[in-house]
Amino acid sequence: MRIAVVGSGYVGLVAGACFADLGHEVLLVDNDEAKLAALQNGEVPIHERFLPELLARHRGQKIQFSGDLQDAARASQAVFIAVGTPPTETGDADLSYVESVAREISGAVEQYKVVVEKSTVPVYTSQWVRTIIMRNGADPALFDVASNPEFLREGTAVTDFLYPDRIVIGVESDRCADVLREIYVPLTSGSYYRNPTAIPRPDRAQVPPRLIVTSTRSAELIKHASNAFLAMKISFINAVASICEAVNANVQQVCDGIGADSRIGTRFLNPGIGYGGSCFPKDLQAFRSVAKECGYEFRLLDEVIRINEEQRHRFLRKVRGVLWTLRGKRLGVLGLAFKGGTDDIRESPALLLVQDLLREGCHICAYDPAAMGRAKEVLQPGVEFASDPYEAANGADAVLILTEWEEFSALDLDRLRKLLRYPIILDGRNLYDPAVMAARGFSYHSVGRPSALTEDLPAGVRPEKKERL
Ligand code: UDX
Image 1 (cartoon, rainbow, N blue to C red):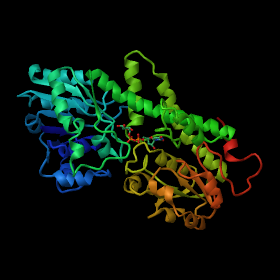
Image 2: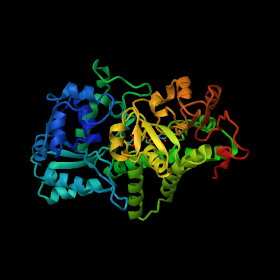
Image 3: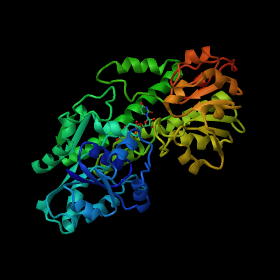
């Protein structure tokens, strides 16, 4: 099928590349000419596993890049809208890009087509998109609007797309549902997975995925509610971690215990310095606004957001509790991205912590495997950047682990200890076992687990006891 994908950001680029791998003819549309030229020249603007391979495989063949939205929409049976929906000052999603795309599409509705919202949008958006397209002259019999939310995580977006837990399509007519079913048939029939060139299957994936057909409004709510629920899981376990610290329990053991209940599960129960990224913070605010507009005060979400912010402040207090004064202290920081496997620093708790520490007068030498280019734009001057974790740790008063990169969980600990001024590690992502770290000669402090102390601190100032709930 010929498909136009409007917006070559995270979602659009991944969706376009994956649709091409499913065998569709994709027209990827963007109004940023520099971006289009870069994509045409073979550049890959985001750090995302398997995306370079897919773009190289299909560029110029099953994927064409275009700056002409109307032409692309006219030539396509389905038009996916994947433009940004940034937050406004009040926390609502700014839907003006979606509206202007809808307006332009209206001029291209000559034969039946389906217009699909792929961006995360509030409930009722599809209805508005339909109204705008009609208001601008399109024949209502010649198009339908659907909602097909994405559940991609950065870093694993390609495999999340091709091996999804479920595919949700929100539609108002059978005709529209049939078009979307056809688009995803290589996944739902399992034929894609038998293809020898298919992107390899991740361990956990169940194939073929389930297709869930709902109304457009339900689909819009599924996306917001999914993200809110996942963020709630993270804040919940972070709150439990704070109690663990107060009573000297181990949050890891608590997680194993509660996660073994199949109704709860262990995923998204990793405590840390809080969630960040381009989705959870923005989507929670937007969902709260949507709820308010519908007359419901979603106070649970206020608390999820509050716990998340508090988690970062707690970690800062922990650093202070271990190092005492902060002015002039030299810290090696490992990780700046909002999570491992990505170069994205949007709403990164790691980056926010570095900014807090700079305000406290610390000297920071930071390393991140992928996010330093972006972080330099925000943190320089003021922060030194290292070319590996050991250079960041060299001569430091302590090392702080702030992002859950896999390579940070396999450091050469002897080398690290020798480079540090004091063998102190504050791990905001619980990447190591405290007992192992103690045996390797470190004072090791993590989140929600007893600290391993190799030195005697004055009585009563063990950091986890100093923390107030
Ligand atoms: C999220 C959703 O997972 C995805 O379905 C949606 O489409 C977009 O938003 P993403 O933002 O890429 O994806 O990252 P995710 O892996 O969900 O992590 C979000 C944040 O939560 C990161 O800062 C991560 O470090 C943090 N996190 C995640 C935890 O602190 N603990 C966990 O157990 C899981």
